[in-house]
Image (tube, rainbow, N blue to C red; front, side, top):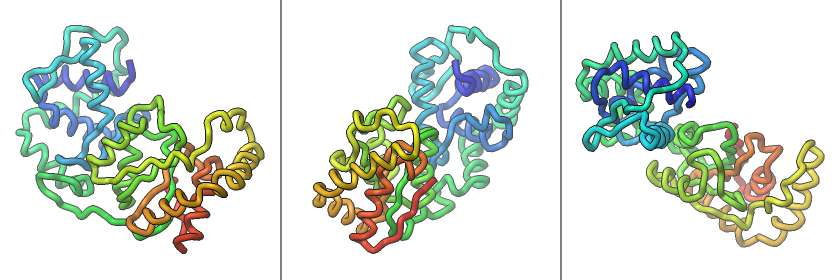
Length: 284
């Protein structure tokens, strides 16, 4: 079991009662914000959502813990500890940090807790249905690109929201991923829940068989020369379509690789920049 999952169970145990889902999410957010520990630095990431900071990954993993019997639903909006015990204990210091957050906040009403979180972290209220204490940014037009390698889906989406992106253009040939949130259907659903348009343009991706045995920058350079002379030479209509997206709203070309120099999106971006006259901005 992952350390972050043990931390959630420790919070449920420290509460000593069924915990409202929104309440537990905010406790987890406060733990992440208040701790400098390396383990909590790799804790859940959060994105501004309907009631402040939210983690899609947290909810997905709590669902898995429910299936395994570690967590039970209580009514339609609460979680409590299940009947299955954790086999390996949580680090004592991390357990103390989790319990401290719970002790500080468990006797607050949900409204009071939300008020505290909203007032301390107004940037996470930009999508709130309850109260907006900050205005969601809209980025200036440019040819933005980004990779999600090494990021949770929440950290990745938060990057887009805080940058002011309005349209995600997925340029992967095969939009599947082992990491939660980056499969095409899931990513589309999460983007749309944050009012970010999602479009998949598979014809501008690179076939997976061509991406084997890439060990050096020279290997990547050879691949991208082929990509430029083949795909980018024949898919002019698709490139023009992407250029239209970029002119209409702040749009980001997305693939997996973190570094643009290791991804075809940087070469696609050059073509789009030539058509639009806009600058390229790699979000890394």
